Length: 217
Image (cartoon, rainbow, N blue to C red):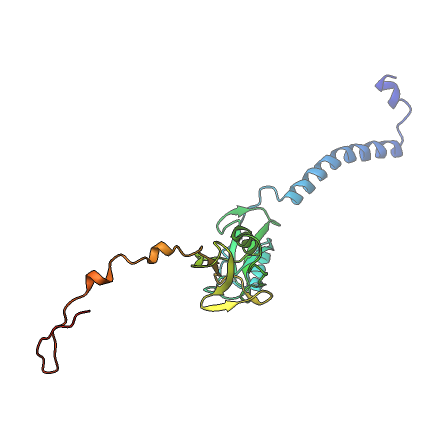
């Protein structure tokens, strides 16, 4: 059908209103979609991330919200030198320019020293297994303390500082532990006399008046 024939006999107001509406819809839909997409993605918008390190979590969330950003706590750790509940790390870092609505990931300081229950590692399994178990639970270890005369690498006890700690006890996780372990059987040759006593005596020459006299050993 020719375009001329399509319009023939269609000169009513209703017809032309419909045509205009169709044109407007065809134009408005893509324009509106582009506008909504720009609004949703914050196209061209740049917001500088503030520095929230050292701030309380509440203050950090407020600062970020005021700039159109969202705070999200993703991790926590313990730092005794920092205020409890304060922000220790942030990502993105301060000064970065991001779009509105961007998540800012925070790591906060625990409000108390992290605690954990000590497992039973004394006299069970190998030293390697005991170390692996303790480290998997987040415990830190110092150099082992060997005790001669006991089976080598047998775990005899656990110390935290100078205090003995025992299985089932809830203790600070970040304070280092020392494993007391067997150092192996004593080698008796280490204690053999390296000299002959009979050949090492001396004449002592002191009497009651301070005079010398001979004593034969």
